[in-house]
Structures are given as C-alpha cells and as structure tokens.
Amino acid sequence: MKYKYRQSYILIIFVLYFTLSYSTNLRVNKEALDSKHPDTLESINKQAILYYKQGRYGDAEPLFIKCLKLSEEVLGPKHPNTLSSINNLAALFDNQGRYGDAEPLYIKCLKLSEGTMGSDLDWF
Image 1 (cartoon, rainbow, N blue to C red):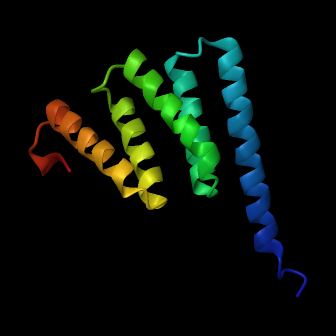
Image 2: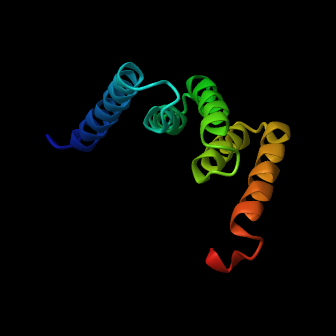
C-alpha cells in the first residue's frame, strides 16, 4: 500500500521538472541570444509543445503562432523547422476541434513539403 501513489508522484515530479526546465531554457535563450535565433525558436516551440501535451491550449497557441511567424521570417517558409511549426499549430487546432483553422495549415504544410521534398512519398 505504501507504493500506491509512487507512480503518480514520479509523474508529477517529471512534469514539474520539464516545465521548469523549458521555462528556464526559454528565458536564458532570450537573454543570451537574439529573440530570432534558431535556438530561441526551438525553445519557444518546446515550451508550446509542453503546454499542448499538458492540455494548456490557451498557453500553447500564442507560442506556436509566435514560433511560426518568427520561423517563416528567420528560416524561410520551406525550412523543416518552419514546416514543423505549421504542423504543430494545425495539430493544436485539430485537437481543439477547430477544423476550419487546422485544415488550411495542414494543406499549406503539405504543399510546402511537396515543394521541398517532392510529392513522392517513398521517403516516408
């Protein structure tokens, strides 16, 4: 019986650790690097993914949008990280049942991916 809640405690510690870790990493990157540096963009994206996985969609959405806009500006629309940002935002909308918002993003990501990687899906 004494181990009944052990797994729950471990999970809580794990979530808190990563929440603090990503928040600290994002803050440090913003302070040390330009806000448009690829490492800062990656930190923003990781923080948004963490919020998404926690079901904190209201916190995740502005970060996904910011990451997408900066990725398009800094890396270009066809860069793999930009494509991931588009897909992440689409997945967030999809998961919320906002299909009208998700579909154009999925289509945009697919078209840009085809332009970058080709339309042959043998690589998949």
